Length: 266
Image (cartoon, rainbow, N blue to C red; front, side, top):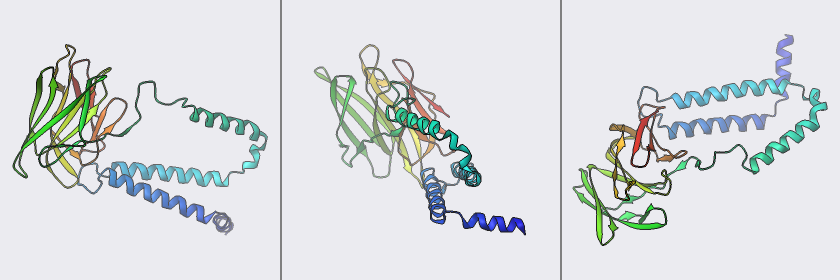
């Protein structure tokens, strides 16, 4: 009876609007993660990200419940040192201390260049294969609707034209990569037919300048055709990342020396 009374008193003193707000934010976060990781698509670990988020939420709710029962007045003597410590931590965040190392990029969605029905790049694509020397990329797309298409990319080389022909995609996506010092490369993802939540990735192609100054198709070692989620390409600290159907695994593409790239599953 005594426990029932204390429990009732404990919940009566809870800030109910705050509790409801926290629970709503947790629910929204879980829904967003489920959507971003395509939990509705059948797979061996389709709910892994959702379950992990729910586990973190449950642990934090338990910790929050404990802290609500903690008598903060016992820390009164430490109020000034804790205040100064928090101010120093805020200043560290403002000054960027403890952030990514120099040269490392934050994680973000890479801008995608698409192809119109007549093969025009949207938006127009200009690449600095050698930094400081911009080159406009032209494109030609041929093939039947719903079938495999041939993509030809071209750029100026002196008085001539450099070409790269790709023919393993029903759909193509182009991106610019800045993974190699002083150089910029074109990443082309050749997709098969778009499915519900996932699409088969047939080929990964990188076009860039090699150590001899020749602009050509660079080798991509380790890539095996696989199914990926219909989610944007992410750039993560000099790596291009795509989520695989076998969550939580991802396909990671990174530069491998001066003349090539490597693709790995993590």
